[in-house]
Image (cartoon, rainbow, N blue to C red; front, top):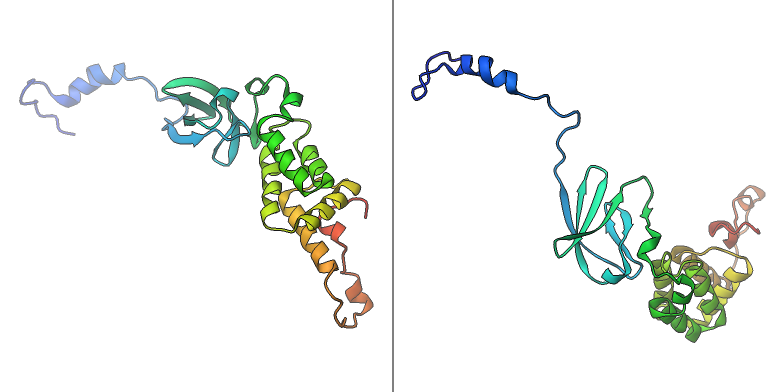
Length: 222
């Protein structure tokens, strides 16, 4: 440690530190300093923004708008035009919901706006698919909006008759479908209608591993 006098002050820096500066120092905080993380986010039609693989609700008025999200420790703060509009406490849950962010009459909203539009598109395929989409949207018109959108997107990729048959099957078996499960069900129906091919003989041990489609889509009735 250099104990020579400072050229300007004429004092020895070490002694100044020991006698004056060190006693004035405060203890370090119990937790290390957390650098805030910022991200520009878009409010989706289901009223949520995404950050770190979690979803946070935002008031209805901000749907479609771009906001800034700040994360410090376990606090999510969301800003619009530099004004704080929402805060959430980060938990282990995927979805963080404030029911006050949604329209008051959620049941009425089921037949309005985007939820109503999705049901209209489903009805063009058939009554069973329309009923399946409506069931997906209930009891809350917005919570499962993205799931319903993903199911509707299948209209452009699969035959409508096939989609209607799959929806009827899911309703009959009371299967809570996801887009992935529904695609599996569609493929299963296609495979069932393929011309039969010469089957290879299977032993009893091999047959023990054979499963129905219900097994893969977690149908509890089979």
